[in-house]
Length: 155
Image (cartoon, rainbow, N blue to C red):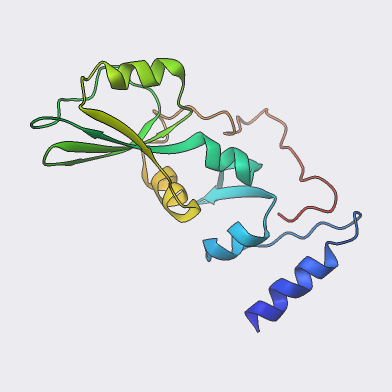
């Protein structure tokens, strides 16, 4: 029944004058269907952007060290999750810039590897992480206009 519903939604959006608002906790369905997403956290709009924008703004890195990982540099912006393990740090960050990459490199890791992150992992990290420290380009201030999905898109 779920597959039939999803196929019906795809069929309905073939015309350019249609938009569907679709809400689900099954992020694999959202990933397959959505052009734009809105992330609500206890009724607070945390993100409203294209799916690709969300994916590109939440990134994960694994830093490997010869010994125990050092503390994160003071002022490292955008960290929403940090998982230390033996000789490595797994960091999930938002809005990675050249400055962010330079600060990661200043920790003198043996290697820095950017790893693929699924929409579900990005979503869970984003909502479970430190949102106050992660200034995000898609977070809406009370006075900000909310971007509507393009005609024919799926939300």
